[in-house]
Image (cartoon, rainbow, N blue to C red):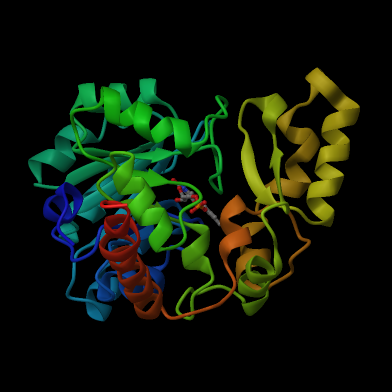
Length: 325
Ligand SMILES: Cc1cc2nc3c(=O)[nH]c(=O)nc-3n(C[C@H](O)[C@H](O)[C@H](O)COP(=O)(O)O)c2cc1C
């Protein structure tokens, strides 16, 4: 399938794997890219710019296809070494960067000068327009359904995507709640030129996470995620578990007085315990409502081939079948 996004990123299928903390290692990115999508390494999972450079080199050994790097700008006091990471990305020959969190304006000139395309992930039309105005090449429009940080507006993709289509001139992809051929065709129908998936890619053979994480996603229904940290205006959609129930109790108790330190035990430094060790109740981990649509653990190639075949059947059989009736 050819869209503005496949052309922009030089990929076969308009399917992107969003950056994911402690999931977006070289193995994940290479598997998605080898299957014809765009795999993405998550920069901040690496302890340093040097480690990111090594991860990029490792990924390059596993695939000769394009892959990207996610740079998430966090509202933290001790900022990570973004300049070093940008240098590692440029020197590593990466051609696509997914930015997320705060406005990426400070890294755009260096990335563009190196011929790197930038796709910024946004949860609102106003942020998407801002990304367009500062020169981003594309945006990833992340609806309320998404795993991770859906922002504070709570607009689901059924509204957000057509709104983005009405306002934007640059190409965009859907993100949040996407799982299969139906998602892809619906996204294209609403004006997107591709789709981004997070949670769906964790439940694949190649995702470098503990089997317990994949099993938890397959077992979960669409009712099993929760929103945490809303009082801190840092809302995150996570899989429900004992730590999340405790966190929500603390939020209820503290009300508007909630501080980050009140929930630090449930959210800080928990990813290695969950993703690597499979200790599923160790804390809050991002997961989308789309878990309700995930019932198997295919390879990335099987998943992407299935999505493209389903999309083809929906467009050429189901939808075209309506024409003359
Ligand atoms: C476990 C997990 C970790 C994530 N970590 C990040 C991250 O570090 N940076 C980022 O920009 N997005 C992160 N995301 C969001 C994804 O890139 C993507 O936007 C989101 O998962 C899309 O929603 P979906 O899960 O419904 O597909 C994460 C998502 C998950 C599920």
